[in-house]
Length: 119
Image (cartoon, rainbow, N blue to C red):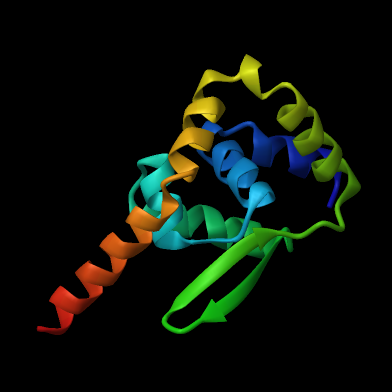
C-alpha cells in the first residue's frame, strides 16, 4: 500500500474514526455502528474498503464477525500511535473512546434485533 492510498483512506472522518476504534480493540459491526452512530451499510462499506486494502483481520465468534486492524503496516501504526498519544486534541475521537466503553450495549441491541427478525 502506497502513501497516497493511506492518506486517501484517512482523509475521510468516518473511515479515520473506524480505524482508530479497530486499532484499540476487536469489534463487530453492531458495536462499530453504535459507537460511531453510523448506519450498518456505511460501516460495512468502510470495512469492505479496509478488507480490500488488507488492513483488517476478521474473526467469527458465533453469529458475529469481529474486526481488528492488522498490525503489519508501519505507516498506519505510526499514525495511530500519534493519534492515541494526542487523543485529547481530537474531540470526536475522545467521544468515540467514551462510547466504546459501553460497547456491550450495542452488541446486545444487535442480538435483540436479530431475534426480532427471526420471529
